[in-house]
Length: 79
Image 1 (cartoon, one colour):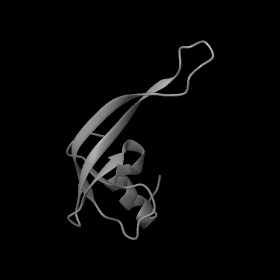
Image 2 (cartoon, one colour):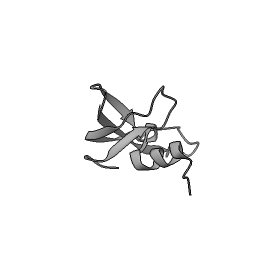
Image 3 (spheres, one colour):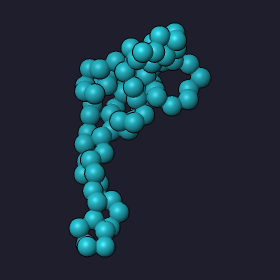
Image 4 (cartoon, helix red, strand yellow):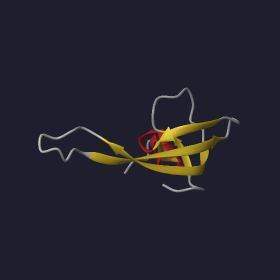
């Protein structure tokens, strides 16, 4: 996903609310240390989303889905 994409929350929420990604931030996160000292790291992407209800929130990449895909699920049109 990228700035300008129309999204919806992928977690339980009382209603389907659309939002637009207005900012994106990637950060390298140090993860679980390994026995060989190398460790595991990963990239964490967060988005700033302006929601149609007037709120703005920070969401992890796993917390938002394409609004079009969520709408299809709501209508029972999943592929």
